[in-house]
Length: 327
Image (cartoon, rainbow, N blue to C red; front, top):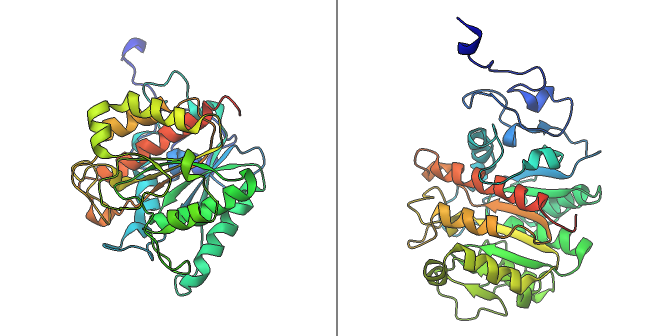
């Protein structure tokens, strides 16, 4: 075989498809790695609890105690990690830079909690995130049901003050209830009432379920998104949040069930994966301080399309994080 016809090697001297174990540095994309094998860290990042020199720790919260319909989101972090091999071999399109060259990103593993003591979960998740933020490291959290966002927001607010929230979801998650309940449909009600988030400077995108009390949130429901398009959504979000510290949370059921069947509370009429990706790309330049991707339930998935959408969106979050002009 002539030199011109040689196939590029599967592995390089710098990194290989088990980069989760063999990495000597924390930056850089693992190229030429087969999608079907290797250690399934998120985007083949190094598995470590060492936060020295780290910009972002990816961590899972395999919780589905708070679901109101189908359980199974506890398997979401694992499924997203596996699907991320499909998007980890080159920089995300159409970005002009590779976030893994700009950011030192690790896979921190999962938050461990006692499923038999649900009352302890909130404090456990918050302590897990506190430990990461105390090292001046940001988080990308993979869920798990959406309740986990509540203690995460508490941790971030303790560091940054009341946060602007950019919330993608089919549901408002602002139904009122007893503050002691663990419920993935009520946690933003408490976060707003407690001043953890500033609802007047927060935006909810893709909503399509009835809640007659929107609190002070700015809502771009699914009709608004479909009628105005992704660019207008991103522009509207930027006008609302300005340069304030922003936390981004994405419930995968924001996507239409045709794009994301693998979730606990699917609602017809949602966003396409393309629309969601384009909106995220349009948010480049915001002061993003933390992010999560929630409610992937692979038991109900078809061909892993929900997990793949989750992995692709999470990769986009890293791009927006890397593009923060205030970092």
